[in-house]
Length: 97
Image 1: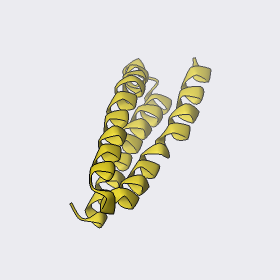
Image 2 (image 1 turned 90 degrees about the vertical axis):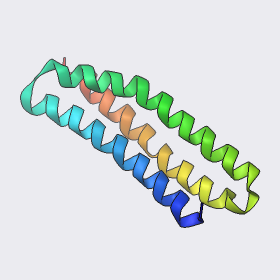
Image 3 (image 1 turned 45 degrees about the vertical axis):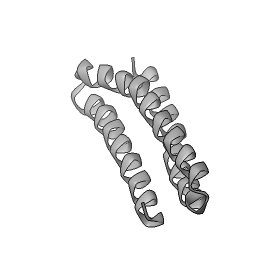
Image 4 (image 1 turned 30 degrees about the vertical axis):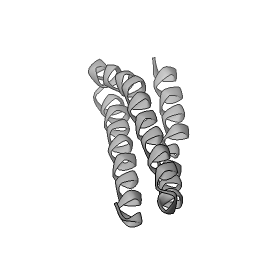
C-alpha cells in the first residue's frame, strides 16, 4: 500500500464510525426512539473493538514495513480522534435519560 492509501483508509474508517455515532446521537435526539440509544451503546462496544483492531493492524504494518510507519502513525492518529468524540457523545447520551 502507498502512504496516501494508508492515510486515506484511516480517514475512511474514522469517517465511518464518526458518521455512525452521529446517526445514533442525533437520531435519538430527534426521534427519542430508544433503538438509536441502544445502537449507540452497541457502537461504543463494538466500535471500540474494531477501531482497536485497526490500530493494532496499522501498528504491525508500520513495524513490518518501516518506510510506511509515518503514514501508519498518521492513520492511527486519525482513528484516535474518535475517542474524545465518543466520550462526549456517551456523556450526552447518559445525561439525556
